[in-house]
Length: 111
Image 1 (cartoon, rainbow, N blue to C red):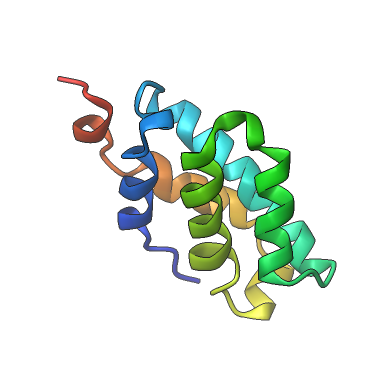
Image 2: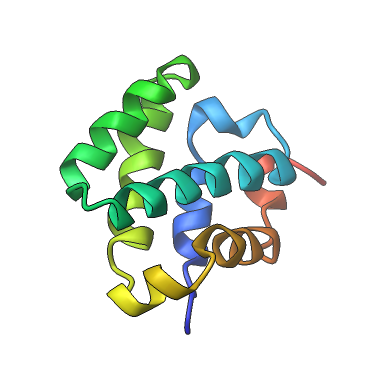
């Protein structure tokens, strides 16, 4: 199983709505989105419907998150995984590991 998506992490953290938060906060909320997307995929929901539902669920986080972060997590992380990986792995844990092990200091403004 391979989850090498640091570019996606950097894309997420460059969103203005997330830039003022810490890496841990970003990783927690995005891992939550991955969990929900994985569950919805396993339930047979299409990518488009998952993006729409999660965007509605997280509407309070702003259009950058719903218009950029959620589609990236759903389309470029959850739905690119083979079916057997989705069925037998905790994608949110894998995502969070990638997220937490990526140096976010430059995009979070830390010195």
